[in-house]
Length: 304
Image 1 (spheres, rainbow, N blue to C red):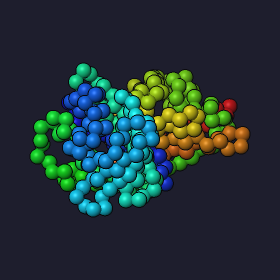
Image 2: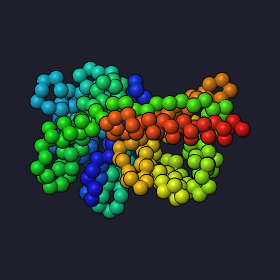
Image 3: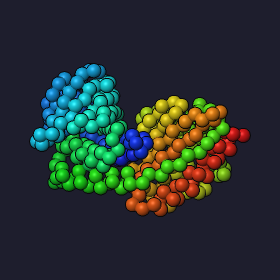
Image 4: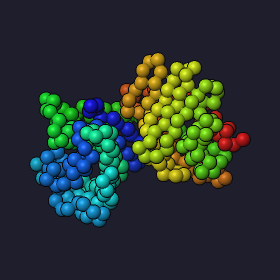
């Protein structure tokens, strides 16, 4: 079982979304109970007061022995597959946390946790804190101790998130087409084929545009494969997805792309935000060149 946490930073600079994905040796029902039952929550998350089991239910969570380490929230939605709550820690602006539970096989489950923040300055702290919690969740579900202290997990994870949030690449392209047409160009096989890497004649596309689905783009002649999974799909204005670029040099985890399609007069402006664990500006500079060329192909394709 792969117990590595996969990270993704999407959203905007003002309202970033942190995504964490981890696999657990447990059934979906066991993971769901661990995320909703107050007794089980106390084993890995904190002491929860209230009965957060149905939309509208309020709760408070005491997260540590510190007197002010308290959060309050309300259940937004709750099903066997997904839980969402509002969240405010120490009176901060309200944010939203969602947990999606997906079976991988009879005994293995993926948990995808997303935290959409209203205060971007808290992103690194939440990144470290959530990864410490997800590590503790594994132990509460029966994983053997690995000898790593929770404080060490939190500090290492915060360092990773500090790098990811350091300087995402942002750019925009005006397109003389409606948001609906741009949306189809990003989320369908035929749409992508009309503009993405169309300077190569051997590109293959697979697109399954749904939450939990993914995409795969292969350019055999160039030795490149691009793949990922969808994190957000809000037709026709917003999509987000993980980004794994594979070539002869290998691949880099924890990259993600957020796309916003904003109406503008008779057309629209496509805003792209690409993040990754980049310790310097070299990857962003390279990606900027690639995105500028590729988005110009989108504009030419839809504007023709």
